[in-house]
Image (cartoon, rainbow, N blue to C red; front, side, top):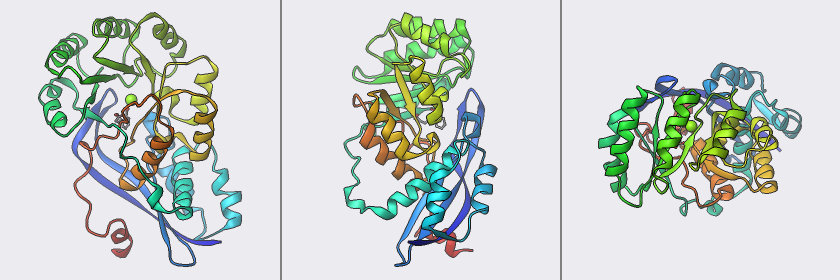
Length: 323
Ligand SMILES: O=C(O)CCC(=O)c1ccccc1C(=O)O
Ligand SMILES: [Mg+2]
């Protein structure tokens, strides 16, 4: 087997900026990879790193692509692509999923049974955004916390909970931005609403694993690790160190899909799949994994409200044609 390989760096503006504890994120950059086999069949892949989250940088991903030959042989697949180092997890995902796409027919792809979680804007803007998402069918919402003053945010939480319909569920995502005191305040408040709060995501920074383990044993509200398990190595580590609550998996940056499958099948972990704000290419590959490996019917964090303005016709092929 032989493939023609090419790639492009693309950048897209969010329809509205994503605001987290790390600041304001306005433009999503990623690398689209294209493989064409000898019969002319084309397969796409996407490398969408988030370096502040623990993956490689976009530059490192581009460097990796630049040093590959234009013609990819079986030997290169086995010796290079399947051996991409763990410090390039988004590259592992992009290349492996592009190769998987060449192997299978797309009929088998079905993720329509999945429930989706919709992302609310941070701060009080959440209060007048959930209704619109609810009308679109979302029943689970995620709200970023640790962005504004904690007292103001706790007040908004109370309002949100009283406003949301009975059956709605709320996830809180601190992006590692709380300190021990703040985390306890949030968890204590969430324990007052046991049927409303799905979980709190990554309350403390990555280096505070044992503190989060302790919190998860003390409070009833579930804690989900996200930044702490950004890559497969971290996921395996946290499991070994005794984490049995929720793991957020972002396939786009976690690493090799086949290694992820093996891990999830070997250990029956409680997982929530989540996007890295990839384009339709990475999204499709990530949702395929979510459909295969999701547990406890947990809503996947792939709401589309943050996505980009509609791509042009014949995308992504048009990216190549225009150059
Ligand atoms: O998980 C979701 O529901 C949406 C995706 C999301 O929040 C996210 C997207 C990109 C980078 C980080 C995060 C995050 O979960 O912190
Ligand atoms: Mg998160």
